[in-house]
Image 1: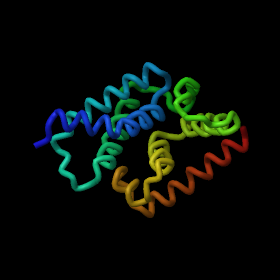
Image 2: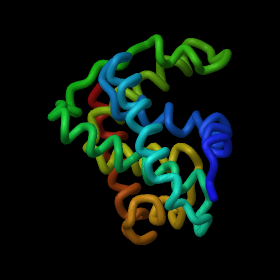
Image 3: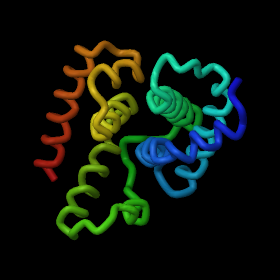
Length: 162
């Protein structure tokens, strides 16, 4: 039986996952807060179904990504033209200004990707294997490899144009 106390502790232990997903799929600080809360709510609603067949973090990513995609569709947001909130990036610890500019540029271009591409590249940047990404997204590992190659090329082309 899953308890409320266990849930709260697991959320605290893995809240970075929720924050990262919400940041990628939100347009501003208010959207970030709303989406963060919606993800936590959906995790709580689904918590009783978590059976331990996958890692908790894998299950969280799946719920967070699905919630974010549904949230965007429901709100009918334009995800292709999004400005990045520099205050959100301030959590990155002691990075020189050049690295910070590169990260800002990368996230700005990631935000221009479609909703599926955003999720895949986020998971890749988190160090997830193709198999883990496939498990979270429902695609095959081979398909993830192909999609990642295309996403990387798309980002490279966008950044070169910049």
